Length: 217
Image 1 (cartoon, rainbow, N blue to C red):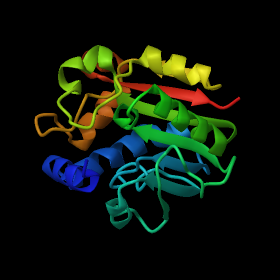
Image 2 (image 1 turned 90 degrees about the vertical axis):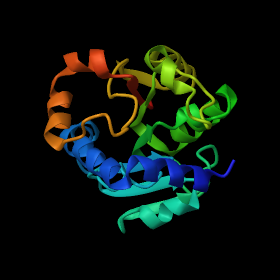
Image 3 (image 1 turned 120 degrees about the horizontal axis):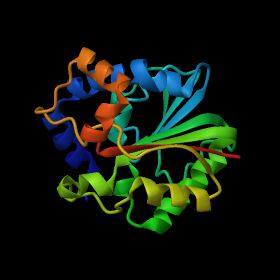
Image 4 (image 1 turned 90 degrees about the horizontal axis):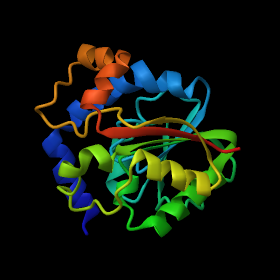
């Protein structure tokens, strides 16, 4: 599978500027508060940097196997070109937060997912948090298999069980958070996104992605 070509086509079709604009609002209106100030943050599968470029942090690391990622990351982001299962150049207990958005579904199986969990646990400090967002197979099953590189279907419950058996403590589990994708039919005006984030009741109707927060005891 040619990951560089696939992602270039997919994200350019969705609009890189649009994605960056949406994530700028998501970070400023929600994730900055969720993460807190003066944290060392690492993003798994950072892609073209929509999250890691826009989040407020003391230090930032973007991990991805796609070498194209380095050309899209801000100057304050350290790029690590490696798989999430083998982050050898990231020191043990060196970050406060690991973030992953729409990543776990690309793993081949539960064994590979367990190896990712083990690496996340290794690089997190005690009390550090693993924040995971992704398509909830319970609510996104119609669209889920429309992507060639989707392999591992997870619900908010199966993810919580997997994190628990890996030694994490799940502190927050939202079954429905954001809509499934950023296709052009979905309104992405900044004020609409901020309004949506302020009304959790709307998440129950439009949300098809889970948001799970787990802590390293």
